Image (cartoon, rainbow, N blue to C red; front, side, top):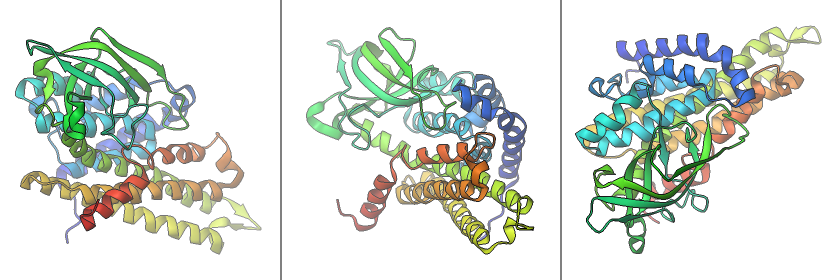
Length: 387
C-alpha cells in the first residue's frame, strides 16, 4: 500500500498549513472570545482555493480530490476549529450536493461565487424538533397552481453560517404523506422576501462559526431552483452527509493534533521534582495513547476520502467508511483534548492557553452531522443490513 501524497496534495497541504499558522492561529483566540465571524480570513481562504477544494476550476474551485480536502481541513482545524467548520460546510454540505445533482445553470449561479469565497453557502436540514430524525421535518413547500414556483414555510435551526450566508441548500416537505420520500431539496437565495434570520447562537465552542435559526415565512422559490427531482431530497441529504462526515473527521483530526502537539511540547518544557514531566510514566502513557489514536483517526479519515473518490467513479456510496472515520476521529478529538488539559494542569484550564478551546471545540464533533450514537447505528445497519 502506497501512502505517498501526490504533488497536488502536498501543495494544498503546505499552503493550508502556512495560511493556518500565519493568518488563522494568531487571530483564533480573539475570534473565539468575541464570537465575531472571521469574514476577512474566510475571504482569503477563498482566494487560496480552500472554499471549493473539490469544485472544478470551471466553477471557481481548485479541482482537486477528496484527499486534498481532508489534508487542507486538518491544517485549518489544527489552527482553529471554527474556521474549519465554515470551510467544511461550504465544501461538503453545500457545494458537494449541487455539483452532484445540480443543473448547469444552478452550478454557475450557486456554486461559482461560493467556491471562490465571494459568497457563503449553508445547509438547511435540521429543525427544532428534528435533528437525527431528519425525515420528521415540518417545513413545507407548496407548488403554485401553475407550477412556476413553490411557497416555503417553516423553520430551520442550528444553521452553520446562517447569519452571513448568501445561499442555502434547503430541504422541505412537498408531500408529507410520503414521509422521507416526500422531501425535496431547494436552492434558496437568502435575501428573498420572507427569510428571517434569528439571533446568533451563543455556543460552547467553535464560537467564530456563526450559527442561527432561520424562519421561512411564505418564501417564494422559482420552480427551476429544485435540486434534483421532487421527492429526491432525503436521498440527496443523506448522500451529502456521507461527504460531510469526512470533513468533520478531518476537523477532529486537526483538533486532536493540536492538542497532542501542545502536550508533547509542554511535557518537554514543564519540570516537576527536578525533571521534565514527560519523563514520568503517567504522562508518557497519556502521550502514547494520544499518538496511537491520532494516527488511527488520520488513517481512517484518509481511507474515507479515498473510498469517496472510488465511490464517485463507480456511482456508489461510502457510507460506512465516512461514519467510521467520523465516529473514531471525533471521539479521538475529545480524548486528546481531555488528556491535553490534564497534562497541562492548571494552565490547561486557563484561557491564557488554547487547550481549553480545543476541549470546547472537540465536543461538537461528536454531535453535528450525526451524533456518535447515530454513527454507531449507521455502521451497524450497514454491516448487518438490519433496521
